[in-house]
Each structure stands twice: as structure tokens, then as C-alpha cells.
Amino acid sequence: MRLLIIEDERKTLALLGGNLTEQGFEVVCAQDGESGLAEALSGQWDALLVDIMLPKLDGLSLVRQLRAKENVTPVIMLSARGEVEQRIEGLDAGADDYLPKPFAMSELLARLRSIARRSIQAKPVALTVADLSFDTFSREVRRAGKRVELSSRENLLLECLLRAEGRVVSRRDILSAVWEYDFDPGTNLVDVYVRRLRDKLDRDHAVPLIQTVRGLGYALRVQP
Ligand code: CA
Image (tube, rainbow, N blue to C red):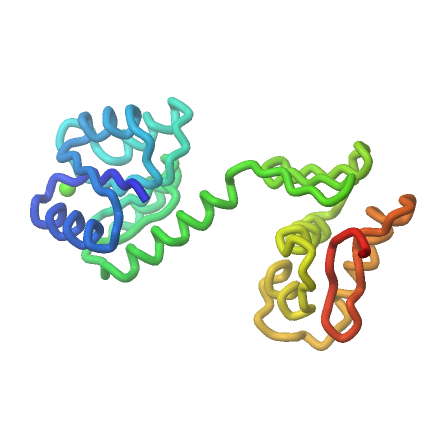
């Protein structure tokens, strides 16, 4: 991951830079808002760490200007502890996350991992099986070229099955991916939604794609 740190406090900068480099990040630093903004706009970054109080251009204005130029690089704002107002302002300005100083390096790393995961998900990818296609960016679903309207849960369920690339997905994994349950609620929720998805995707087609694998779960594939 390529990171740009915009921070004027030398001590924090050295600590952050050192730690993140050690963790395998590629780190570039800027020490005031103006040069930080220029760097942010001229390079490809996976994330920006932006201090709020900066010389020349403060962190909030920096993020506002960045977003005004339609730059969507994820931003984590850093600021002195307890500044709730600034935190809200930071998020309003277009920051994605916020870390009060002093923070634990482990927490920063966790936020960066979360940003990395989101950015992978945000890259548009077309997932296809036979004549079914799913655009992970627009979330549009088509079967045999025809648009299929799905509810948001049905859409998530379809994505979950597609991402397994034909492998069987257990009810437990579906519950976790679609409903974020880490337990089995003991209902037939999954089966109900699979039935709905089948109705919309498979009913009018000669080749059904959603397979029930008895005792194991479901798979989306052309039946062998
Ligand atoms: Ca500062």
C-alpha cells in the first residue's frame, strides 16, 4: 500500500513513517498542507493520513479541496484528542475515518487494513457464470442480457455465491456474508432467500444455475 502522511509534528511523523515502513507500507511524507495537497493530487495513493492542524493549509480544507477535485483517495484524519467537533467536521469534509491522537499503532493498522479491503471491493469487476453477469460496481444483474431486479439482500446473496466461483457455500457462510450474523439464528432465512433468487434468476431459463448441495449449502454453477 502506498501511503501519504501529511503531518507537521516531526516526532509523530518519524514514529508513523518508521512504523509503517517496517510494516511494509510505502510511505511518503509532507509537512504542510499545501505541499501535502500537491502530493496527494499528483500521485497514486492507497490512503492519506492527514493531520488537522497543519501550516499553510489545514487538514480539513485540504480534504475539501481534494474532494472538490473529485479525488476519492481514502483519508484518515488525525487530530488531538477530544476534538469531537473537528471529528464531525473532518467526516463532513470528506474524510473516511478519524483517529484521535495519541493512537495505538495497532489501531491505525486495523483502519488501514479496512481501507485496503474496501478498495478491493470498490474496483469494478464483472462476475459471470454462463449467461449470468453481475457488475460489482453498479451491482447490476443480467441474465441472458436481460436486467434482473433484486433486493439488496438478494443482491448480496448472489455476489456471495458468485465469489465462491462454483464452490459450495454453507448456510453459515451465507449468513455471515449477507446478514453479518456470526451465529445461526435457527431460521430458514437462507433457504427463503435462495428460493427468491431462484425465482428471479432461474425460473424462465433452461439451465438453472443455483444448485442445492444437500447437507452442505448452495453453489452457483452450471450443473455438471
Ligand atoms: Ca499538527
